[in-house]
Length: 374
Image 1: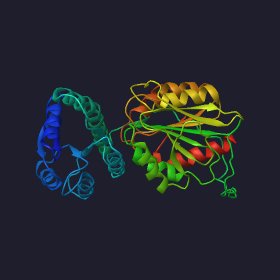
Image 2: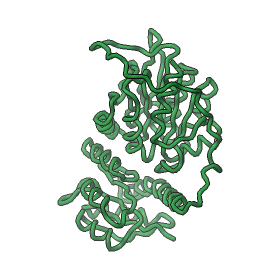
Image 3: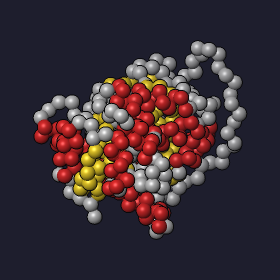
């Protein structure tokens, strides 16, 4: 049975490019096209597609407005946003992902028609396959026939931990508390479904968390800055995009810049220093989870609490293997709460996960693990 896709874009060139790219994907059929948001809503109701490729910026009704209208409709297909590689495009795409869009691709900025069709096809193919797997799994879960225990290693219980402590006394303005030997370091890796997952996990971390939180979210440049800004508005802990050379302070969240690698290294006084660079991609990803995890295992062994969240592929598994050799506590998001059970599944299958947990339980587990590491 084919996956039926509705293509929504206000330009003939991109409608044609996306439709031709989709027609070249086995098992995918173009159900129809729409040139604006209002037409898209009508055709979604009439055609009931499985997926919609939805242009962000359109006249009359933009992609965000269409997505908001769709959320209350009887038929809710999956949505892949199609974004321009601009600051405004990044801001709107992050909002769309928070509203429930499955994933996004960026529009090619140059090249021939044939090259652009190939780029769109290569970008859409893994997303469509991931969506198909996600839809199948959710259908099985809804029917009650799925057995999670076949995929998960037996979770290791945390050592008995006291209730989360009361908030610490506020620090004086400008006071810098640097992470040194013996303190904890929280590492989070995430991909597809990440913005909405982070918007649920990070606000659940306590205001007195005695560790910096370092996040790698697979995203291109121009998209992580608006994501950090959006998360900062939702969280008690300050959230920012990481800057090369800055010290990672406890009670702060640092997001790896899109299109760049982020690692940790010891500073002059033993503090955790963030290094942001243009080193080569790993697993075709930059930023890459393994890149961050490996550096933490090398320079700060035994101090990490690492969590691998929803996403495609296996990025993070090898880094977790190195971290656990030095005593890292590792968490994986469970399948039921994942948008795509790829990265967590690979880590679980590799035997490098201590505990599998639903997303809404991970904040407390991380906080307790940080307490034990103090």
